[in-house]
Length: 436
Image (cartoon, rainbow, N blue to C red):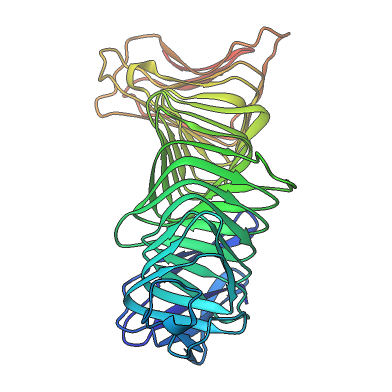
């Protein structure tokens, strides 16, 4: 069993989406306001050979039920119907409209809390539930610590300068705004960010912690690092298959973090993404006058699409997926390191005359270029370039000893020009489309 999904009696609590990302699982859960917090029906998500199945579990009653008869303090016994403060063996529940403040440190088996829940700085709540159970908190204000080794769902949370510790995952989702400002993630905890999440500041990722974007997450400049961590093993930031993450002009700074993309990563105008490594296992990366910087490293495009446009990749680029060039105004994708188009790759270029003459996009390489795979060149309707037309598709400006371009494309698809024969010309420093 690698994860759980819960639903409340009479209405759905969560809907889950599974994507295996960065070697550990992440879960996407959409939280809905329940009618009752009395019972929670559970189902285990089982991953077998990449497939997901659901196995139903028995509804679990609560051992501690919130009444709030005295005040809002979680640690006041008379606020609980059983007249006892919850312990590590108790499953605790609170109905809609509750107002709870956790002052101090408490451990429970699991918690299903609806209403307004506050965990201030210096306080903590830990869920140490057994396999097959899950915690859910709706309308949480967190400045303290959430700890535990079982799944936890946070709906419409306000998280500021808070800490997540332990293993399993925390899913932050909601039907209205969830906001995050500066968090610390410890252990092997995976924090997933769903739709309606607004993220500012950044995060400190320690040990082997992961933050995964599984919905449409807005941000305004993010700093990811491992500052203040006792141990740093393999922290990661990922965009899952359902995730959408746009880096704006304020940038994404993650110089010590491995970044993985399986969804939609967009770098806006003048944006910079700086990371320890960048691997794309599916999905797309879209660059528009923007920069990817991996000091001494490689952008590993294993699959999916790179929309190069006028991007600058300050790293090596190894492509097994598709690199799309932009022919408008002869735009260039600049690779500051080495460029390798592997046997499974495709470079796609489209010629257009929207700016006057017919122009195609170019890969400009400052290191060395190794070619293979497919070159797929198309053109807009009415493609009729001038006589003796020539346009550079790969341009290697390395100052080293030629040839700085090695290899050839194994498959070449060129546009049709009536009465003329387009061809590809390989030179030491360029690959050109020529049409006599």
